[in-house]
Amino acid sequence: MQEHADSIKTYTLVFLSLLLLTAATTMVSTIDLGPFNVVVALLIAVVKMMLVALFFMHLRYSTILTKVVVGGGMLWLGILLVLSLTDFVTRGWLPVPGK
Amino acid sequence: MDSHTETAALREQFETPGQQKEISTLGMWIFLVTEIMFFGGLFLAYAIYRREFAGAFAVASNTLDVVVGAVNTAVLLCSSFTMVLAVRAAQIGSRKALIWFLILTILLGGVFLGVKAYEWNLKFEEHHVPGPSFHLEGTAEQGPAQLFFSLYFTMTGLHALHMVVGEGLMLFLLWQAYAGKYSPSYYTPVDVGGLYWHFVDIIWIFLFPLLYLIARHQH
Image 1: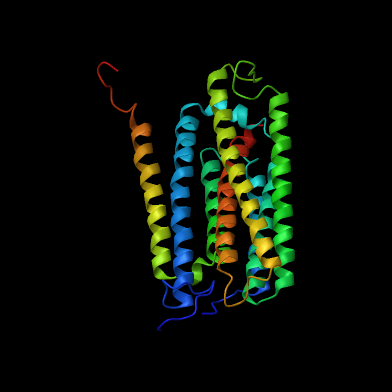
Image 2: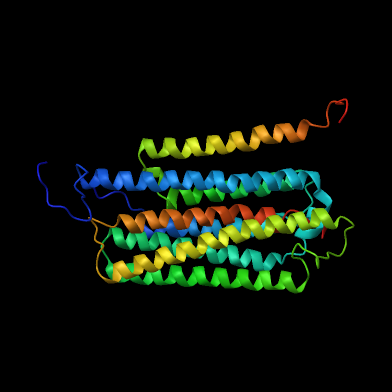
């Protein structure tokens, strides 16, 4: 039952990438990209999350069942965010009498 | 397997140590998924109000010290690094390395919480805490600005609370590791504790850009 342990080298590389991405997101935020500031910030955050989950949390070596559970959690988070925001974003699009 | 002797690595309700470990890990992941939904509601509230009051949120966000926030992010990433090395030490059966990496993780977690306390204290002194004495320069929208700081205190507060719980877990692991309870054939608590620690790190990975960086280019 001895499972995979990544080498210290792999962990160090992941760690350095995380630090680098933190510096990158901090610096990019000072440049005006219009609506893409948020997109870039979230994209970098998602990459960092994947690095932590796949390497530090060993999700790469996890059982299919664990991956399905995690994927399911993300799916429900997606439903929460996307369905709620489609409501709030589109509210002003049509004139509603009596509003 | 009939009538096996019960050990920490193999409780009687499990067939094999591998099965027991798998179940423990899955249990922690299911708990973390409930945490995702729990924090998810706050991230949703943040998204809705930020969309509604972009101007006030930008002014309010720019009062946070981005250098302090970035350094604290690095501190937390360091603690995740020492945590993963602690798990690795447990995997290969190095009790001494496990103890030291746990101590480092606890110390880095403490530094993070200390910096957070410093930042919060600053907010109180600057009257940026929602309430009767709230005042924020540079915007006429005092209400929405208070909304930003309500979300700021709720989200970083809940995150800090998770850190405090994590510190408790790490102290427990340290005590058990010191007592020599863990070996390459049984280190599930270290592994599962690590999952929790990294999860709390991931929450901060999202909090940092959303709270500190949203309007830096307008500075």
